[in-house]
Image (cartoon, rainbow, N blue to C red; front, side, top):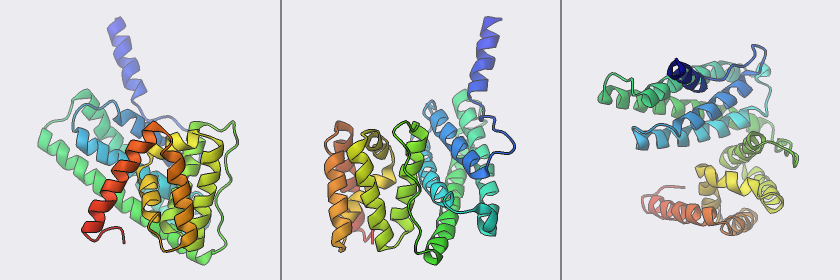
Length: 256
């Protein structure tokens, strides 16, 4: 009897969080992705593929954060993109649950399903980035979203960090610089931002990339940021890894 209760409770903990019907779809997508990332850490099979999926989910979070700075009600493209994202998140959550429970029908089939969901996340991220890029080109005055206060939750801090990443990715030179300045301000004042930055692979990658920027302002801000991050043990190893990846990508003509 107790085992049945424990099993039911375990399955409930792996369910997607219940959100009110009136909740904004962007917020819903963000919360579901965070829930999915958390669940994925308990998966003991297909480790490499789930690591890749987590990375893609982080990129999707960044794209959603950028989309969150605009009014989806006034953007038909965004209104159409979010439901598709939610569908893929739900689909991926089902795959995660089956991997946790070891209830999938076949290893090769599950590997194929994971590859397909990875491709879907890439498509969603590219679509959202394109939508946001077009908006930023129209609204050259766009500014970084309001910085969370000192009492902000971890998720609020992560949302803000992902918004900065999206601006580093799709913004023009000035917007990239402003995002870097904002990032340097928060990591100097609150080490929680450093800890979260280390978890966002794309953010560290951009910082390393910008060190080689021809724009002096961008280069200087990137150097400042990496200097602070390298002061943390977890930051050192991540930066070394990012620099190695940068060197490999450059040798193959990447990171243009």
